[in-house]
Image 1 (cartoon, rainbow, N blue to C red):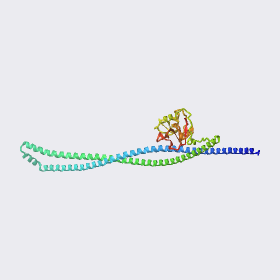
Image 2: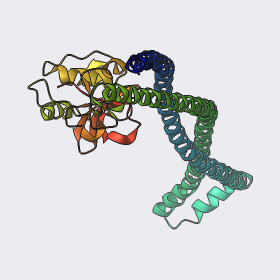
Image 3: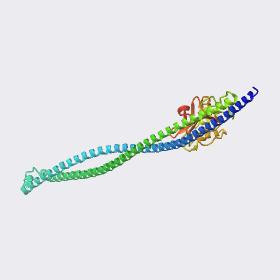
Image 4: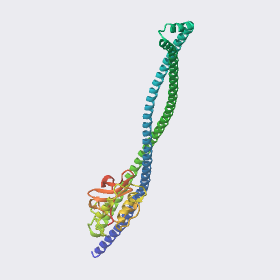
Length: 392
């Protein structure tokens, strides 16, 4: 019976050693699990960043192509409008030509008739000779009547000559008009031909651009599908890391104090709400950031007014108050202290896969979104939140 306490001590020692060895093994295993998950997460993040950059470049090219297509469409519409007006002018000009040809035939007919009438009168006077003239004079009632009758004969000759000259002039004028109308028609027909060639060229450009646009849409769809796949991988690895961190923290807390749960799922679960370590107001940071809403987004840009990306926007807004942050969104995800989203306050950083934003409170964010939206407001939960960081 005296050896019993010694036996129990030996058993207790073995159990403790086993527990220590087992605990070390579990910790090592957990560490390997987290390291493996972080590695896979980083690989997916790198691929996601690359795909997001490709998507952004594709969208820029698509926007540029769309601008060209809009310009082509506008030019084609203007050309078709001009072509319609020109065709109306050609129709009207043809009517003028037809009328001029008819007028020319009528003028020539009147000229011929006048010429034949003049020839008959001349022939009549010639065949009757001087007798006719003498008879006309002899039958006169006096000198005044004689002069009147001679003047009448001369006036007949003058009238015939004037009428013939007038008809000949009319014929010439109509012929000149017809020639002018023909030249104008030739000019308009050449212009019509050129405009139709331009129409064909524009329609070809529009068709080629439409084919390219369809290609962009296919590429964007494929890239978006890849991005979604990588985001799913990141979310899955975040869950693995979070679960392992919670489990390890729980085991450590239970082993050391018997019940304090220190896990916070990287700031997304639990009740992590660290105190502030600076005298900077989060609302001041938010107010400063909101001044730049409406300014453009530029990937890699470094100007709050002329254009910047999401990580520079966050870095510059906090830098205004002396808070130094790294340049990339991935690095900013590890800054400061983790905060649960339930405890997020104005001035905290909301981190997504490949993106960061400044929390405004009430579920709202301000961020440099993308090239279409620029710096704008948004809803904090519009994407999966990777972590929330407090740097103030």
